[in-house]
Image 1 (cartoon, rainbow, N blue to C red):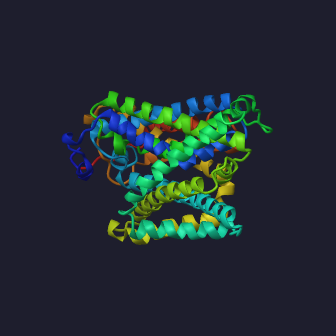
Image 2: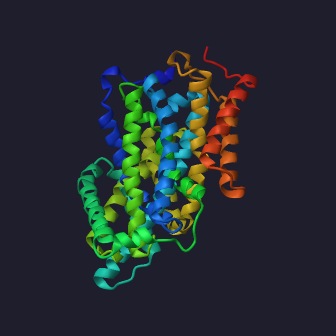
Image 3: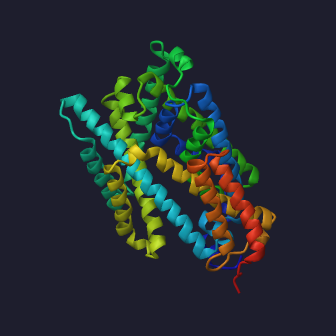
Length: 421
């Protein structure tokens, strides 16, 4: 493994406990998008079926997340460097950066729209003045973008306010939706007007953390051993994810709304709740813009010192997407994430755990592009997309992962990778 990817390898003294790593995943799960997906799931499922979708969906994520994380723990390398074997250094850098850019920019647009809707609702409730959601969305998109470009380091202090405020809002929402009145019985008796299939629900759940599962090696490489990776992933993702999605679903059922800003108004939190929501989306979206900008930098081959320019590009595109109605295409956006991101894990897993037999001494970074891996990814992504949107069959992310694994095992025999000299 004597090549430039080792420059990113961590030192053994940097290893951390599984509890600290689990806390990272719990923090990632406590977010507005999970509430939104939970609310959307309630439109097609009773609460018992949502539990099934969550268990299976996060089970899929945790499965490939653990393999990615254990490889990161073994090698001490981040995801892009880990994938330099399966996809080649150039292939990994381009493909993973592209997928991260699409995901981050898309989420930026979604959350800018949510923030704009919340702001308009808050102003209308307080003053009676109606501000179009599009105008508010553009305004907050620009604010978030400028914060990412010029005030990113100072944003951590805003988290000290945003996170406790969001937790308080979630606690009150649970009280208002379940304890107060007849909410619990309403939730238990609820039957959707237009039922969805379990497969569709599983796909939506996978989309909430598909990216996190693939890039889990970035954090799990700090784990002390493989067992700690598994414990931190499962305990960090399952409970928090289940709670957030069920909370979003419960509030949606009681309020009769899937739009999170409207739910808070319906539950009696028009001011404090919407302020907390705005702060939460603000802090999260600045990270989306920053991460999206770094991904764009890698795609364009620009120095990271020019991150302000690429962050501006990423946030600008996200703001436009929010203004033109990406929130109305929310499910389609989640479908893209579900189809195209898990197959990356399939290729990396095949290269390390099957071809490389799960031994770090067999890991070798491949210069340029490993075409066996790239073609296997394309095949897996195509099958996942088709079985999710064109000819529904089984569970799309599983289909994509299985096909990409099988394709890589076969193709690497006919298209051998060129190892570094």
